[in-house]
Image (cartoon, rainbow, N blue to C red; front, side, top):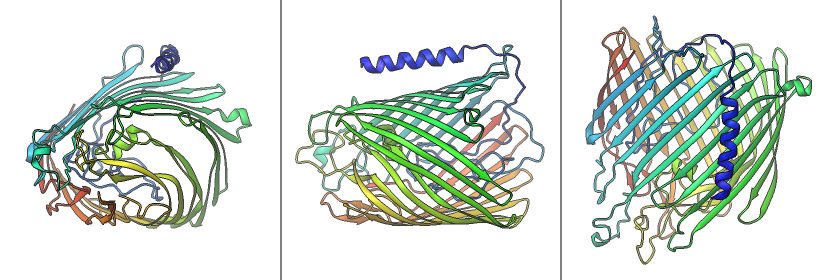
Length: 560
């Protein structure tokens, strides 16, 4: 606790010193909301990763090179970012504030608020955002509560000047879930009157300081506190620094990254022994870019020190990134390829965000990918058709895999009834093929999709648990006059789970179909009707964790 207080004090001192520096007059910059939000239903127990390129405000230049990320779905196991219908407003009007509210089946509710007052007399900008998503049960054949609720409150303060631009953010999240996926063999006398609630609390302070005409170009400090209802706690301190290219004759760029992660769990799975973990990571990444009219070469040579303080183990990692881009046919076909590598510091916050049904008894370790060889093509077949394909081979070291926790002989916690997940680590080789396409049929209709095929080869485990082999997402946007809509179809297949008897079980694949519709009542007010899981498929997100059936939510949004 003393070490954490010292770190917090140093962080606050440095951050406050920079934040309080007065600057001269800045160039006016308006915050524009060009189109109202059209959010998905929040916690309806569906899969979701970060939104793709089509889920953004209009009038942003899109890039169509395939990124190394999972295919998102319109459904989420916990509330994440809203999904925007990508539609251009022919006569956009500037608005600073926005409010949205909706309600639907199963007691599902959504609320969003965005307030961004104009600049103050001293040229400061500030704002507040609030989102709240909840669903009240609705899962068939579940013997305990299975609702979810998430609230996210964010504050920001920013100022731009001739010598320094800075921004400070404070974000607080509270995510309430239930371990409702009970093992089928649990008798009613065991789970009767059990409160299987878990609540994750996440408080994060972060900022960006952009210097001008100094040897330090950018500083990005952050401090995160993460905890739950079972006395688990975690502190994650990060500091990123980008040095000015002028230090290296404007030829080489360099980044320095620092991270200190410290946390503890109050118990182990099946015992009362606590778990402590502590990591110190330092990375130096010089980079160089060479380009001509038809060729571009980008190189990054990452040198990292990973220190596991609890076991007194230090690893030195060399993680290069080299990518070559060649224009084969101008505006039609581009070739890209190279090698990528990265280090991932797993944390309780990151693992619980990916799978909220984990037990508070995790083994926290570091993962890294020393080799990720890739080659692909991207471009445009016409001004209305854009495409991308990529193949890759990836060697992941100490990759985190979610496994179903066995039920102990004595149930002494609400997460020991065959209803929680732990983490194991294994080396996994992955062969992947990806493709995406986007088509503008007319100024009213746009469509697109992407698909990923993965083949896993784990070293120790029988299967790469809970990693999907096939993921596909398609969408169709339509907007004419005052009516707009988006149809989405998502397919996931090939996930394996390990059963309590340590036998692999393949979870059924699923198809999700969603329809979001809206009507512009006037320039400020919109009505929304969203339908989710229209085929009412009763699939599992994770073992024993089913989803709600067909859902509908109706609401209004207002910008001002």
